[in-house]
Image (tube, rainbow, N blue to C red):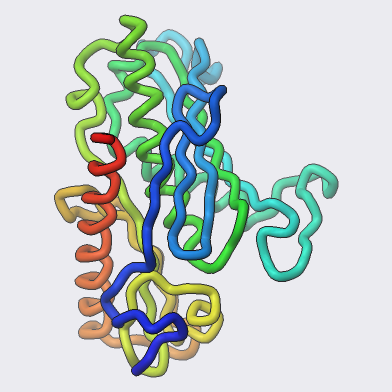
Length: 242
């Protein structure tokens, strides 16, 4: 069955990772999944949250936001509303959890890295694009610490695995990889999968949006996601080698 952009069911959108997109942060990446564009920056600061002081461990956390006109209608800034919305908070926590799975926090010492993921343009898969881009930004920030002799170990040992994420779903009975917005809104099953470069799972979030789904459908979606994440891992490594 034809997809809106002509892709095969198991095909990612064109993926681009542009490092050093912003001149100020210790790591910055503009990640593009088709028309979805997210700016991911990694900022290194001395110290850790109060509850972590004295532990000898560093900290990695994330904040996610969407520009007012990243979507087809304008949304109010959450700073104007005076509170962070539930969806924003949940995605921020997902990104932070995912990236902490790839790093030796002890090697950071009592330093923190904050990952800011700002959606410039949304066309589905913003959280998965953010995780994929934030990994590269985090890698660059860890490299910055290493250059200043502030890292206990080599970068490749501290960043001991890569992390990627992709969306999958069932539309008109067909499992599909990397959903764009027009697919996402009519998906019978919608799922976000976070993987390591070795194909292990960090997190799986799946919902039957229109009814339920079978075990064989779940297996098909996970197979699609693992293959897609492998392609994203290759794109990450290519970007880091450039």
